[in-house]
Length: 212
Image 1 (cartoon, rainbow, N blue to C red):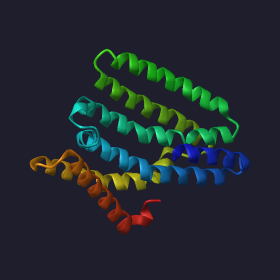
Image 2 (image 1 turned 30 degrees about the horizontal axis):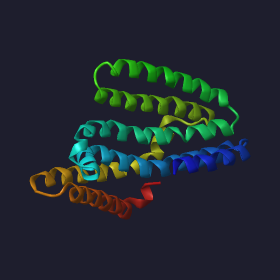
Image 3 (image 1 turned 180 degrees about the horizontal axis):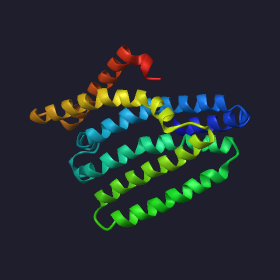
């Protein structure tokens, strides 16, 4: 979905590259929309990583449980970072992305070399750090071109963060509560997913106007 959005945004930005207020509006709106879906879904996946792995793949994949949390948390950073590229390309400042990507690659190499020495799990957390750094570097370039601040960006992340604050505790409580009951792994996963979805719907119903 994010890839499709990027494909639409680039030509749109190119057509209105002289209208910065319009580009700012579209960029911040796309950030808000992406955050609403990616942040709560992947954060809740990280919270219930064991249930997700066992429910989908079974006991033979137990070793993957520790890898899922950092990799899931990396996805919102990756998705939000990808929205900066079309802005930079649309404004004809490709060199800004090249510079940011070089910096991100250096950070990735340092983290990979530093974490691979310990274990695959530590390496997975290094991947999370690398994605967070890449998000910061690419987004900083886009914000600078649009004369926006990090506070402007944070305001448009509020929907995803609000859903996270409401759904994650419910998912965690349901997941932990079911450990005291003999429930098949897939049924447990379904219960956890439904609880998170219900919490999200409740938040939409109560504070929907604040999400976007």
